[in-house]
Length: 259
Image 1 (cartoon, rainbow, N blue to C red):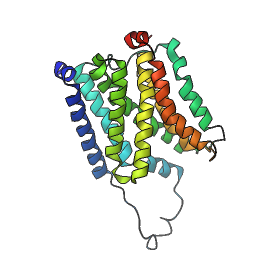
Image 2: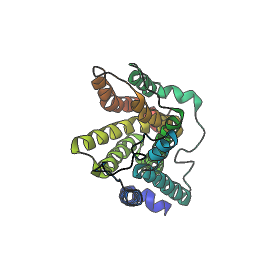
Image 3: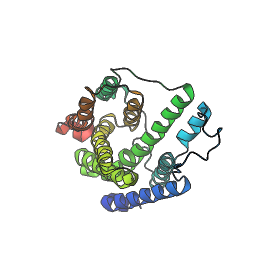
Image 4: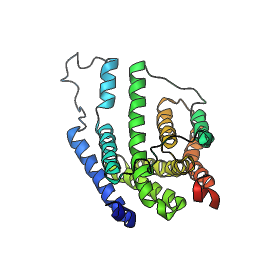
């Protein structure tokens, strides 16, 4: 099985994406969205503001979160079958390489430069858990499993391929979004993946990419960034991340050994 995956990585990626879309369908069937069209028939108790516990449960209990849990479980099963945990980047950090994440962290600081609104403790912890699971699931699939399948082609090609595949998954799953929103999410995901992939290669570990991904996913949910700075953030989060990822892979030496 391992040799087949290495020899036919594109076939493997297609099969994996189809499996992920199937998990999307499963998640939406198990936890369907249930909008309420008419509130006139609801009781007064139902119209009361939800408690912190109810807010936390609602934030966790949705199809998107279930999908990433299932995707992470799928990645764990396949990585175990292939024996690729270590090769997929689940290893100790190279602490001396962590300066490479300073640019993404600076982007987070910029997003918070106009202030932020922290939720209460319950929703705060829930929100952090949600973005961490999603980031870990996505990185395990694309910068872990698929990365290992494509890396014999070289890190630059692998970064490009896995970034495009990330965008394909986001676009295919965005069936409930309007087209402009779907394109925006796809573009941000694919461009961010260039930086995540480059950091994954340079640090030889998946964990810095997971941390940066989770931070970049959570910060906008609490940011009070003004309208003047928002377009700047959009350009940094797209073109800026593409350029930074390519900069990290700028010469032959780092493409050979990550150093």
